[in-house]
Image (cartoon, rainbow, N blue to C red; front, side, top):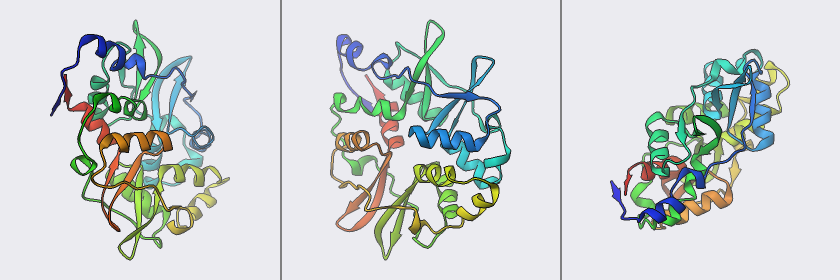
Length: 271
């Protein structure tokens, strides 16, 4: 548990949801096809979309739900309405703290909350938004203190479906690619969106899930030293628009630090 003595004026200025939320919400009708949502996510570089019915937001779908659906049945890409993958909305008041937001995200295993003011939805706040607060907290933890050590990875010859299964198992959007005990790439949900957005029918979907990871992975991914401060990791994630950093000690991958690890820190913070 992390505890900080911060005065009320600092709290009001820096650590409230109102300083980090976005009014920009992309939404689709409840009967939109999964492939159309995939294309919309890819085109707009987003990983979540809100579901609307009769002018009211009724749910949300993230790339994680889509990945789970594809693992269970790849045909959902062209045959299902997006509402069948939707989750309930989780909410936060605009005047609440980022710490409460992080606790809801961590406890509910969600990466985004709708923001309300006077009981009306006015925007959203996500994991990446909350990372912007970490430099203000002056947390002196290092990456090695909070990273995940039990890293699961794939080999270049594994298939996209293999990578997707591991990401779903780990509730992660990223998986390292390792060859000869060295990190050679990263495969992520962003790659999933890019690959599946190009499919025009179910047959193509079934072909791409069997493509080797080596053909679609990101080569030479950004990494971080285990003794770097977490503020450096947070800044790198925000500035480079990435959600995970492999942790490298000399040449060996010894862990991975993700946005979720950062959210856990905020969720455990007391002031």
